[in-house]
Amino acid sequence: MKTPMAKKESTKEKSHTSTHKKEGNDTIRRTSSTNEKRKPKVQLKTGETNVLLSKSERVQSSLEWLHATFPQLFKKQDLLPMKIGTTLDISAWIDVQTSKESIPSKTAIRNAIRIYTSTPEYKKALLENTKRYDLNGIEDGNVEETQKIHIHEKRTTKAPALDAIIAEGAK
Image (cartoon, rainbow, N blue to C red; front, side, top):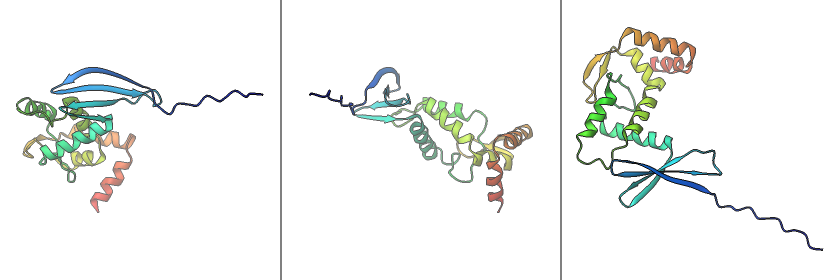
């Protein structure tokens, strides 16, 4: 007697692709796999190369670009508080550049700055410094006492790990 053959499961992933918008000279294509939990990746098409980047990879790439482009402000150690409006300054800087090929999107830069400024190390820098700095590392404004109080309040309710980092830095 014949037994029904089990249907082999396909190892191929089905994917959904749609092209949405254009940023500068790059065409952005969002793709997601039906086997994934809908974490879209963005396909950047620059000239002959196609690169798929997740949001975290775009943020990391943008942070690296910020470190390389503005090393006086975006340091990996001994962070400096940014002046209010730094994102606008970066946006204006991008607008006057003639070649925008290697520059991340403004959205990716904003996301990277949001991540950068939410780190315990950056918050520690805000608490320890009284000055803010521009893209060239030059003093430009002050860290207000109310901003420091706000950070202290958040630290006591949300981020006790910041205490450990501050204590470690004091040693």
